[in-house]
Length: 189
Image (cartoon, rainbow, N blue to C red; front, side, top):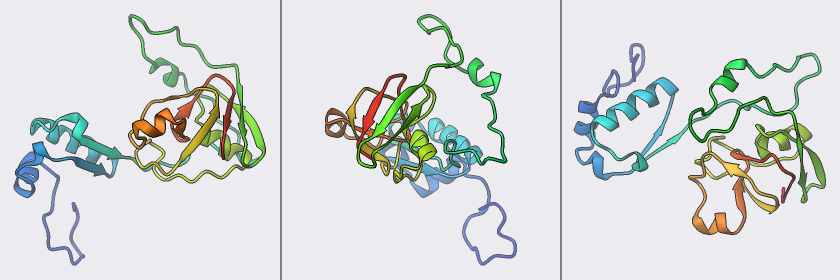
């Protein structure tokens, strides 16, 4: 809580510091930490946890963000990808040359009987939303698991797949919010 004036709040007020964390959980370095909140707060807490030597693999984060995909209303022009997005791509030894994607694959949603295009930088969830296929979702960052769907054909990459077990991955389950592919896919949704 940062602004308790005018509320019934009687707990601590101020930013979360390493001292505050240790006071609340003295054995924090031995615990699994679940973190959710505004990006600036999460960054500050992750920094504090690093100072307390909490191993990064024990820190699970959940970001709630507005949808990025879906249809653009007819009266609203689609925004082009900013040049800064291309510049932010990985560089250095072993990195592939970066260029704006121009090819599109197709994604078939076998349960709903719909299909549409899938740009290389578009998630399966965004492609589904664009053509009206409903896939449950919550976090959009690969940690909640709400958007798990079976992949019937094709292959995908997922930047974050925390919500999938090894068995689910081996069985072809993907996280629609994270799954991207430059090739054609068939998804059971």
